[in-house]
Image (tube, rainbow, N blue to C red; front, side, top):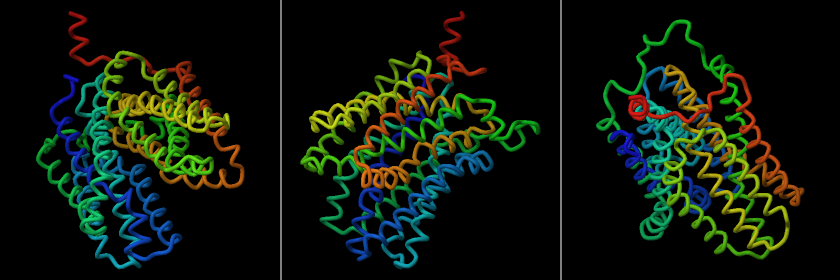
Length: 403
């Protein structure tokens, strides 16, 4: 971890505070159907278009960063998102379907720029640790956030949840203004060669990245079934909410405890086999549920496999995309990855819900097959021409070994 610059530690610390007050994704539906008095379908529509806005921001935010600078884009996105979220309690109901998606879009934009800033700041070869540090701090904040949000909602009001979320975004925007170099971490417009490849040409020249993006889209969609169809499945088989909550809590705790040490331990290993194995384990987790017996034991095995898979594939895959990106396309490469890795937020619940309603016995076997196939596809990319899959060492390490 000594190769991670101070600015990345500061960014990760800021993300902890943002994640700790990110109450919107947890309490939005309760707020809309409770204090706002909306019907379930109206609340679902607003939440749905907000999710689409978030995914769209992830897919497109990198263009703004590559064009205008990642520092500027990150700060602007945080300010726009913060103002939108803080204003939600005062927003007329008819305007919620506009204000909330705009705020979510701005939040999505910041994710690609944040990742690009990590990629530019961390020496090549240490990026896995840099992204793992960011995930560690964000996961720690998400663990702290929901209980804190419940305390605010019950002792003050739900309105203050969104005010706190918005103020957290605004604070991070100001914080980033002071900690990020004013002229660093982005390529000036004039530096890119006129004949430099565009996004699609660069992706076609890197077939492993294209396969990886498709695999991540599949993995995220099935991975997020644990937040949508899994609790329904457990309830249908007599397993209460307490058991489900305990599984999620233990899984989150294990990710927080193990991801950084595992990432550091595997830092010299080639990334694609690690990523592929992680995605395969996510698929095998759902295969445990497909047995249809010993439901609690199967759920425990599933959660263990999903947790290990999560630890193995998420940080290395982000770093692999960063290592593969040309400098002038770093933001757009990160946007493609960010969009693929969060699409499950929009796709998982409707796709899994429809299948579970009409063919409940088919959901878990299908998830298992999709996960194993996606992971096998990543493993198979090592045979593609021109694929870079060596473990990259930091420059300092290279110099020491060559002297």
